[in-house]
Length: 73
Image 1 (cartoon, rainbow, N blue to C red):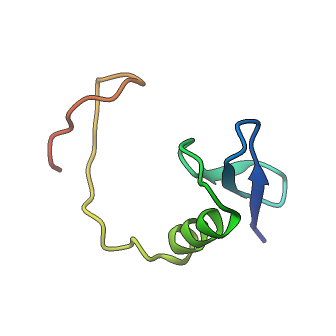
Image 2 (tube, helix red, strand yellow):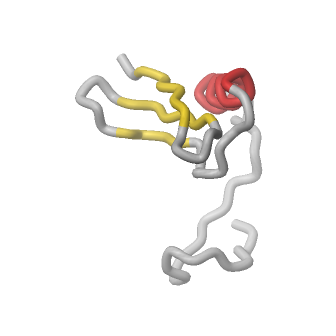
Image 3 (cartoon, rainbow, N blue to C red):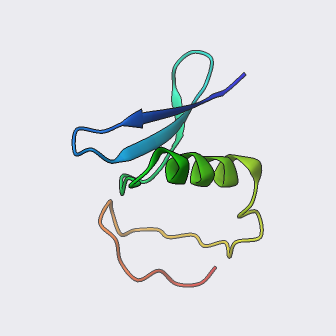
């Protein structure tokens, strides 16, 4: 069973990640961090629980790791 992990970062903010049983990370908070443990927990639970399941879906190809304006899918 996967495990939600909340942790404090070196910058004092809170982060979260979802890990498989073998320790492999399958989802993260995106790196922005949260000011409180409860904010990190709430966003992790929303993400893992499917709160955003109706989000707009997009596919981005050919831009590398940097962000660019994506085209709608």
